[in-house]
Amino acid sequence: MAELTERHMLSVQDLEKQLGVNRLPVFIQESEADFLARTQEVVEFIASHPSVKAVFVSGPTSSGKTTFTERLTAGLSQLGRPALRLSLDDYYDIKDVQFDAFGRPDYESVSTIDTRLAGEDLLKLLAGEKVNIPRFNFKTRQSEWPESTQNISISPSGIVVTEGLHGLAPEVCDV
Image (tube, rainbow, N blue to C red; front, side, top):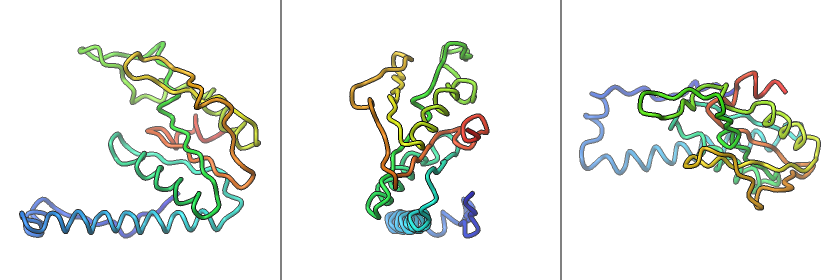
């Protein structure tokens, strides 16, 4: 598990003092450069360990999981470790989902994910088998099986990067 020992802790007052109108674009550029540099460090670490076959990315809603995972998979592929992003969002199974007062489904619970299918697909991918990966359509609240996600596999040197709100839940990663 990653250790974030060099986190930047800023208060609202710190931001107001440091940013202002003229400093904000520079702050954004510096933050993006820092993010890219840290991501590259993770990429190089994983790529240099051939025994790593799976990586799990987790975090709260809107925390940047997908952005990080896309950069991670691209970086790994560039270093000769072809990576496949497996999004847990595509494994939603909302037959028994709870809805709020406005009719919105609760996608925050791990029980809304078909962890059995996600786990089976992950194990098959790691074994070099082909899988048919679902795509969850949030508008229809249904799983779809587009042709582009059929017969997917990874190469022997490949890595499966599983990402989602529950990417580190035992129901998902203890397969």
